[in-house]
Image 1: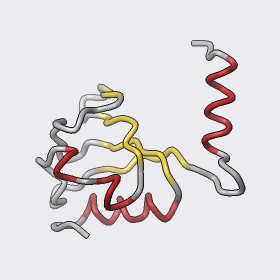
Image 2 (image 1 turned 30 degrees about the vertical axis):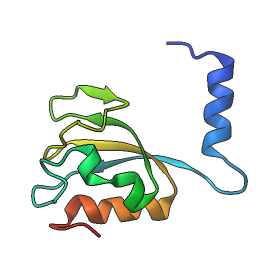
Image 3 (image 1 turned 90 degrees about the horizontal axis):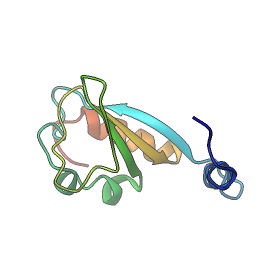
Image 4 (image 1 turned 180 degrees about the vertical axis):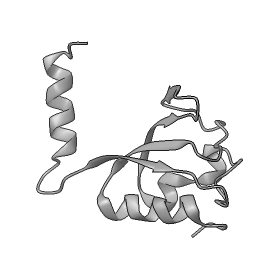
Length: 101
């Protein structure tokens, strides 16, 4: 797949916004996580972490891009998110915690 130059420029600008690097990361939802069986709306990931959820990688390998707010999260799914390292660290805690931050 060949990307259009404008898309490459956008990704380059977004991932190097100013002097701060924005990461694209994958975070796994653990078995005991309160996120397990929550909708994205209930999980409130952007409000709790500041991250943008780009996609969800399901256990079977299917990737759901731009999942809607009613998407139900499941154990062992990977959230593909965009944000800063400290925000990703907050999500890693949420993805393993039995309750919200």
